[in-house]
Length: 395
Image (tube, rainbow, N blue to C red):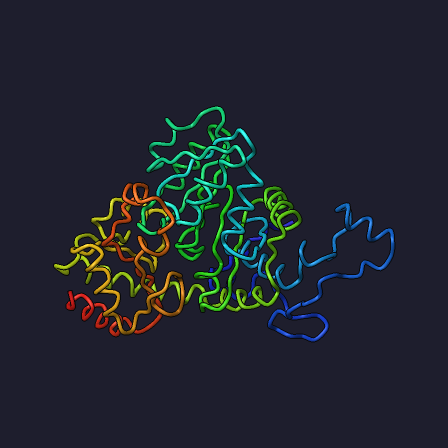
């Protein structure tokens, strides 16, 4: 038999077509929203076979739903994974993953800075279940931190909010040598810029609320991994915790995915220009953006990212007062804590996204009172540059 030499589909083609086909009953191109909470299995034997896992088919929307399944198929294809499972939020995806993969007595290592919600889980929730979380600053510190109790390594890259870059291939190599599972939060980069599974990472998690949805109107989370790991995470997160995604939200996330590569490309190009403006302004002490050669993770980012993304953080001279003046002077950029939206958004992490993190930990991570995080949207870059310039001039 001749070997299949068909070229791999591009990211834009996968974003449009993966995980879905026209509806067989109506021909609808858009994935129908299945609102059913339960599905008939027809007869006694079929029901028994489906609940035992011997026979495929839908049973109950907490376990699986056709609309949600289309989203999961699309995300698995985009991340180059075998399978995916969607959740009601990014934190539901993260917590379900952790609860499925670690047990009482285990140790978990997290690399780099984490989103405040994830940080809270590591420091307050996991210890209640007998899981000890250890922090290291970079992949180069992993080897020394691993013990015979280490079961999982968790990282974000770029991380939130400092845009630190973790070397995913190095992390994966170290973990594999010790037979330890790895999880990477790919929310900031999206599969358009980085595919952690292709670099050796075992599990990818997303807050789908951000770039995947992209329009600020849907909340969700996704996990992508091997079929065996996804089945395990699905069992804990959906069957036991019940953090299932609504089919209405799934439909909005599918719609958002179709334009994901276009939005990420546009926002990343704009972000690169904005980063240079900030880097050259006298009111700015430091810019944290992996696209700048001065960024400590620039070389690694060039290897594992196709572009440098739409997120950045910057330290303003003058601390909290300067951050307040800058943010309140913005006219086009909206103050809000989310990211990955069509709209450009800015926030003060110390008083918002990381306000629940202890001050000493915040400062250890570099989340100071003068830090501002900016998520660049898809507006005309010249308009964004003018708005940011006038807000800087107000300092």
